[in-house]
Figure 1 (cartoon, rainbow, N blue to C red):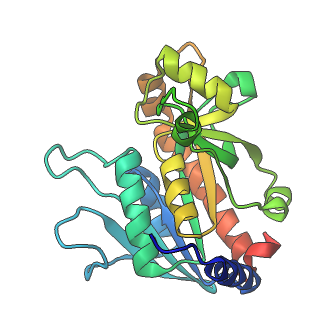
Figure 2: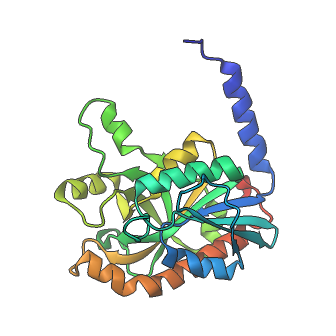
Length: 265
């Protein structure tokens, strides 16, 4: 094995620091469901990329265009080629995040979408939460050090000025590949201190961290996980209205970002 070169670490840190001082020019927004994506596609007047930057045969969809001073791409993982449902979950999220960063070299990634919220943490249906940190709750590996790897705790991009300007709620985000919550998941979510839970965020965070791209998480609450209504029923009942709230909040975030560099967020 070749010896580790500390000079490469220093050069990488210098590149990241320099990037933080440049105005943000290119944003990639990762959204899991078409219902969540289309209002923003229309809001930013984006067009579908018919000459795809992605490998042939994958169902992933890119909408792109220029909004104010920003090049914006909304990436939706598309629909399952056999079952025709949205490609939700961590596998699709990590793949499209990796492919999007490689192809588009964004200055910032935004993972936007709906999520379940916890009333014990003050969440209500319709709340929009800016995640402070993200972790997995369904990767249980009870071996020293591997247990922390499974949790995969990562910080979101620090954005104190954005938070102050838009008056969003903040909280931790916990990610797993199931819509419901098993007792094991509940225990892990409580340990993560999560205000909201989703099916993509920590996977996006892992890839963004790997490739050294800052990432922001914007999650709108469709259902109360520790409430009394069945999760699936409440999610479907509130999806349209909450997607509208998500659309408004993401637009405000993008408007705030326009003309700023990462260090000004």
